Image 1 (cartoon, rainbow, N blue to C red):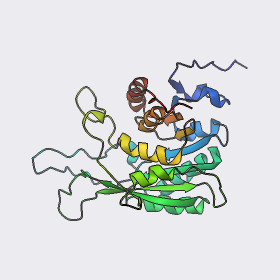
Image 2: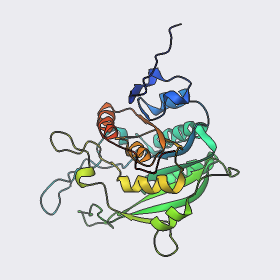
Image 3: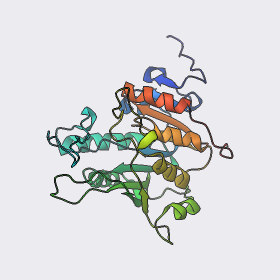
Length: 284
């Protein structure tokens, strides 16, 4: 039997074949691989918090949308967002929810974000699997994409489900000072007003095109991480995209493991993470 490959501390990207059984080797890494191959290789009960931004299954028709200015709307047309049926999407969802539950500590929490296309299906499956929902949080977008066809309301919100792995879970982290600061109104209600990812924060290729169609704003992940983790906690994102979760975790002194199967996202994420620094006062 060959010896396992030693992973250097300065090695940011690792392959799923390099994963061993030691958590220390995985801290602050991006795994280039499919979460369904990677998650079973991870030790059980390692994550303090999990953030998941799964495919939305938007079911978009092959129709070109034109803005009033005449420019084309670049929607979500990626192959990873396409499923043959609701049953296929439900099976996919149940599979990853089961896998991530195994790696959650007894006191861990999980955040899942989605739109009206998928979040209700995900919530039902979470409850069927024994997850206990603590809150939903409504992300109210201050700059949503208008409804150019004018046949329905502009979809200006996304929903985040915040949950624990079962009803009996105790000791999860909730930093209420941050929650009240971020929440709406005097009572810090479960509504977050934030813009979409734009400007210099939006990662683009050499042609100026968006690298990831649904890149989340860092301010959103800041709210997730600051309200539900402590410095030094271990944050896992199994569908990490361009690794906004990892960037924000590093910024606030949290350890992280990002899993992503699309090479172009991983390469872009590695560049932004290599430039990221931990803010003073946020170390362990």
